[in-house]
Length: 216
Image (spheres, rainbow, N blue to C red):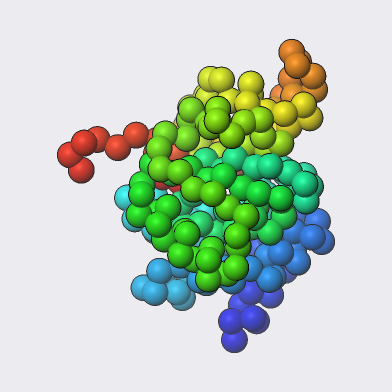
């Protein structure tokens, strides 16, 4: 039954949203999305909807996750910075498709849960950090790919400088109801190319937590 639901998710939701890269589709088939969904929402694991993960954050729709990952044009040798760990599912997809992934989230419980799930899925090429992902990671830069799993009002300052030559920075820019997915490619030390990819309304990135008391 689960495999039938996974098949339908890929064929009826994801392929129809212009995700046609066979390696991406094979990775989606292999990676158990249901492992990253809380028990009370298991019936929604393969549905075309956002799924709550806590802190007013959600997993993205499956088609959004797939289209975003496809847009990165990942190579197996790529070094990736993932901002907005959330459920850990997109991080897992990236880990399957790239050499290594450094993932950052403002909520430590998201990081802890992602580590547990990635260990269960035998993903050993991921490193973790709790903090403000808008700052990137100067210590680990440069990156071949930087991806934000939550939307931002405008491009985060200084992140493009953490790209390697030919590196790509993906983010969704804007505010509801108008957002657009963009990718910035570093063509040389001083020059960058920006491409608008597709309209995509997703939850905003949480990068700061009030002392009294992000992702995706």
